[in-house]
Length: 188
View 1 (cartoon, rainbow, N blue to C red):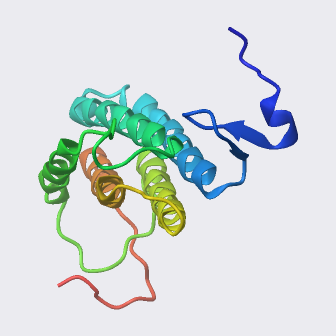
View 2 (view 1 turned 180 degrees about the horizontal axis):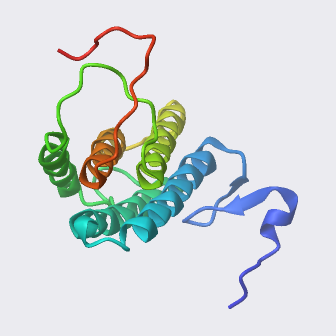
């Protein structure tokens, strides 16, 4: 099988089901952003895999990569609906438990954080912001297409998950988090 087909040479791509659409269509932007996110998650896994302190996070992130792949497949299929999702909606409860598990590991904060600290934490914050962009792409797609709510819910939770574990990474490494200096206390 060849890696190239030539279809994209004129700005078109083929969706699941055989329809051709422009590479800048809302659907392609949405699943393309999930693909980008999955690559950043891979970078985070590569960084975390070198330290036994993070074996739980690596396991969780590998599972998330499969979830993201399933979501991308569902988004790439114009016939996807709530009854034929590849994505398993049980993963919504799973990720909520993961967020609950990690959000209280580092000390509570009262101010906004600046992304950074360790390089791995910064990468996880990039994952968070790319997830937010994917969510915006899904909202745009939903104006003209049926986007199953389970996809939108999981993506919304996923950004919270990345925020929580970015803080956990810095905490476990003993790296101080930097706060936004010009803001007031926002979390009570």
